[in-house]
Structures are given as C-alpha cells and as structure tokens.
Length: 403
Ligand code: PMP
Image (tube, rainbow, N blue to C red):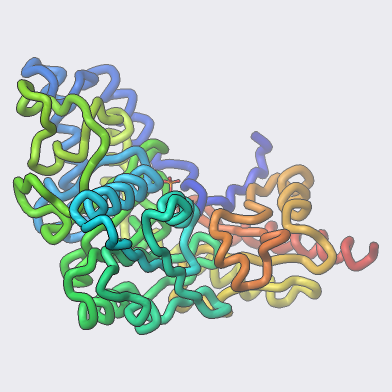
C-alpha cells in the first residue's frame, strides 16, 4: 500500500477496522473456536457465549424487545433475502390461488432489495410497486402509504441511500402506513445507517430491520443481522408470517425433521460465522458517538470543497442535513469510472466510480449510464486527507477542461 493511501470507500465497507477486531478474532480462533450450540464442552460454550453477546449487543443498539429477535446473518444482503423470501413464501403458502400478493418499495433501494423482489415479480408471484423519490433521493412517506392496498403484505424502504446518503424519514413512513394498513409488515434496510445513527425498532414500529456488520459497525465482512418483530414472528408460532426455506441443524431440539419454531433457531440453520461475530463484538465495544460527528464534519468539508471546483456536479442534498457521510459527484467531460481510476492510480485515493447498486435512483437523478463518483469518509480519515482529495479532484477537473 502506498504510504499516502487514502480510503474513501467506507460506504462499501469500513476500513481500517479497529485494532481490537483482528485481535478478538485471533483470540477467538485460539481460545474459543468451538461450534456454538453444538456440544456442551468448554470451547463450544465459549463460542456460544460470543455469539449470544453479539446478538444482545445488536439488540441493544436497535432497542429490540428481546435479543432472541435478532437473527445473525452473513451480511445485509443475506438478511434482506431471508426477510423477503420469508415473507413472500409465507404469504404464498396461506393465500388463496387467485390472490396476488402486493409489495411496496421505493426508488432509492439497493439491488439487494430490488433484485430479490424482482425475481418474484418476474415469475408473476407478486405485484411490485416502486414509489418514486425526488431528485435529492428523498421518499415521500404519504406516497408510500398511498401505494398500499388490501393485498399489500410488505413495505420495504432503505433507511439511507447508498448512492446519495440521503436519510429517509422511516418513522413517518411507519406512521403513514400504519394509519392505512395497520397489519402490513414494515421492513427497513439499515445497511448504511447501522452503527452511525440511532435506530429504534419499537419506537418506529419496524417489523424487519436488516443490518450489515461490516459498514458503520466496523466489524468484519460476512457479518450482519435481521431483527424480526412479534408481528412478523409471534413467539413459538408454527405458522409465522416469515417462512424460512433454509433448513438444517441448529443445535437445539435435535431429534425430528421439523425446524424449531422458536427464534432465533427457526431462522438460523448451520454453523454461524462465530469468528466474525467475535470481531463484530469487539468493533461495537470500540465504537463511540463522536465517530459519526467526525465523519459528518469531513463530509461538510467535502461538500464545501467540491462546490468551489469548476466543472464538478454534486448530487443529492447540498448540505450535511439528513445525510450520511456519503457524497456523489461527477466531473464534466469525464466518466465516473475514469475519475475513480485516476484517483486510484495517480493519487492513491480509493473511491468508487461508476454505477452503484441502486438503478432506480440513478434513473431518478439522471446518472443511469455513467453513474457517479462516490466518496465516503470514515473514522480514520483526516481533514488533511480530505484536503488532498479535493486537490486531486481540482487537478483532474482542470485537465479535463484543457482537453
Ligand atoms: N443495502 C444497502 C443500502 C447497501 O448499501 C448495501 C451494501 N452496499 C446492502 C444493502 C448490501 O449489504 P451487504 O454488503 O452487507 O450484503
């Protein structure tokens, strides 16, 4: 790695992780690395303790009523698939053959949501409504509620856009849909916000919350979680509104071919990424509130700096209000991929240039062909590094003008 390397791709995955993450993972492998829940011996018990500690830390973070409602997964995509497949399969199992289920989502969604829903919609198994957003990537809570009908089983929205960083009013969306369709399941994709800003599943009446362990929480890749509400999965229910197709060993209720009916086991088959969750636990122990403030002050510096460079277009909100530490921009006359490549090879700056995984949002802001350059500072980013990034953009923009 070049000694002047600058990492501005924390929206993809946070880097560097706290030192304690690697240490905890090494310690887990050396001293605790049994299979959690499988076997009563010392190492299995140590591993189970690690897994349960991670579960309860995540539960506290999102104000889950019970930690058993936090299902540990391999990442946010895994959580989203578990939730969407689960809700759609459960609805298909119990609805009459002529009843077409209906799902509402928004134009800011990540492909993890859109592609998963599209796969059912293209097979004719559900009607999908994608509610548009405005040019700053903001959804209208009332428009989401108005899109619901008596066939709607699920409303799913992102807490913040991975492209523009715009924070969505999920509490207002929840209240608007509950007024109209009190029983509908409400899912929030918190991939970009988990670990950054407060999330309260009880206050906002969220049924399914999907979290990535490797972004704002600063844990290792391969970790994530899905929160499941009582409405979605009543305690020890044999017919929940979330049906898990994944089957396998859970360590509990070993005899018999049926999966356990209690959470989290009903949704957690197979050996979990225990070493990853040991790292995530250490990452959560190392986190503090000032991190987000630091990242937002760097984001303000990026926005203000980019505004002064001729030929630079910035997308989304003009300030840091209701925004995550994410900025999307383009340089006139250059394609985003090219800018990303120049930043990388000539300036040793890691940013993401091109089309990001949110096609409807790119359509809404007019960047569906070339995308944009996304920069996302993190804990270890310094104001001096942002200064160097801005100088690099100025040089690239000036050389583009000269062409
Ligand atoms: N949703 C959003 C909004 C995201 O930004 C991402 C990651 N880019 C995902 C879902 C998928 O998360 P993961 O990488 O943990 O699978």
